[in-house]
Length: 156
Image (cartoon, rainbow, N blue to C red; front, side, top):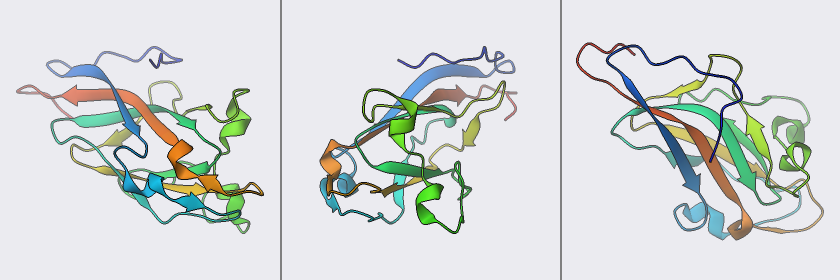
C-alpha cells in the first residue's frame, strides 16, 4: 500500500479521510485489451471514480512498458503537455524504478494533492516509445490517495 512522503494535515472537522486505491487494468478497463504499436498512442481512456465521495489523488504507480500521460477531472495535464515532441508529454515508468516499469510517480508536494469530485473521471493516455509492440494486457495503473467523506458542516 502507498505511504505518503509527507504528513498530511487532518481533514477539517467533521470531514473524514479514508485511504483509497483505484486499480485499472484489462479486467476493468476494455482499452487495456489491445495492442500498442511502436510510436503508437491511445485516445483518452476515462478512469471512472466512485460516486460516494471526493477523491484526493496523491500518487500513481504503473506496470507495463507504456508511458503515461494523466489529466485531472478538468482536463488539465498532470505531466508536460503540448510540447513539440509528443513523446516528451508522457511519463516513462522506467525512469522511476529499477523494476522495469513498476515505477512510482509521486504527485505530492507538501499539503497539495489533486482534487477529483465524486463521480469524476481522470483521463489517461498510453504511449509506446519502444521499438516493439506492447500488449496492453501487461499494463496496469494504480491511483493512491484518500476519499473524503463529508459530514454535516464539512467544507470542501
